Amino acid sequence: MAFPATLVILPIGTLFILSGLIVNVIQAIIFLFIRPISRRFYKRINKVITESLWLELVWLIDWWAGIKIDLYTDSETFQLMGKENALLICNHRSDIDWLIGWVMAQRSGCLGTTVAIMKKEVKYLPVIGWSMWFAEFLFLERNWTKDELALKSGFEKLEHIPLPFWLALFVEGTRFTQTKLLAAQEFAVSKGLPIPRNVLIPRTKGFVSAVKNTRSFIPVIYDCTFVVPKSEPSPTMLRIFKGLSCSVKIQLKRHKMEELPETDDGIAQWCKDSFVAKDALLEKYNTTEIFSELELHQTARPKRSIFVVVAWSCLLGFLLYKFFQWSLLLSSWQGILFTVLFLLLVAFIMEILIHSSEAERSKPTNLPIQDPMKQKLLQT
Image (cartoon, rainbow, N blue to C red; front, side, top):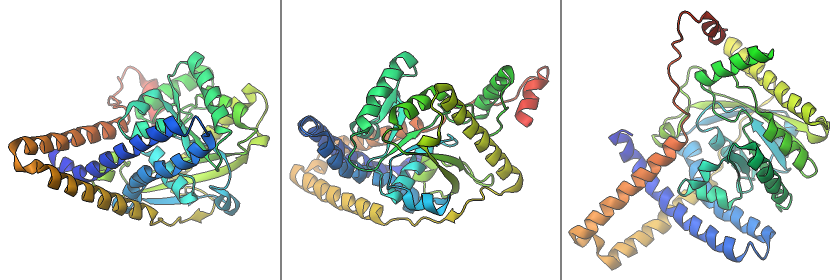
């Protein structure tokens, strides 16, 4: 991370880390003392506490970086967003797709009850990963023997969430890169499947399990397609912390769960077909710059995230002032050293969080001339 970037990130990072640790401590207390008594009451309290942290990230998107989100959907779906349980699937195009999803959930009123299926490494991330664990996200080891049981257990807990919630699943299993696209194309050729150009081939086991185990209490699927205009750089956490704006487009189609097939193979094929449709939509956008025929809804940026950031800033500023006043920490070289080390720790944690959100670095796709098939696949 470049030194100037660290200077930009440090004040925001300090606010996020300190407020996050307070939130984590409160979450741990109610997890130990309230959850054993009433899971429903725990969920309601944890929703408010969790949102007080996650709204800081929403503020980064909405007000710091000023990222514009264009939502394309029909009027009925737009009115129902946040008022019903939904299984949300989306292509995994950028480093912050999950954060854009949080912004849409917050604007729909269900940020604190949104959960996602994620790889288990995420739950060990300081502050943000811990908050996800207390929010009972579903974490996978990418070992289906273990993950199948973990998913079933997690889905059973979702049934008792007292408020409307979204369950998010990136069925591609990983973020889109050119190297992964090439692997997907080669697999498609070997299996006689449609060759993707803008998405990866979905891994359907998790989706099948989600549909089978939740269709009794999740009535709909939100099928989302995400894209960043070609003329703009793909958004990253580092760019957001620097305050660099961009725009994203989302198409959301609502499907009733009862309309899906009953068999495992049928559910899996439905998922594959949805990604073929996503690929066609994205290809059309690449060639015509027409993204969707659905109605464009410009969702307002709620001011609640501003109030939360201001409230945390005032509270932490007051506590730090009192702490320094009481301890005279900056009056000795030991205290100054401690303060410097603390700020370095904040910078280190923020760097971990930023890099954890980045897509795996792919090697340049300079393919050998003697393998023209691979060159042709990437250029089709």
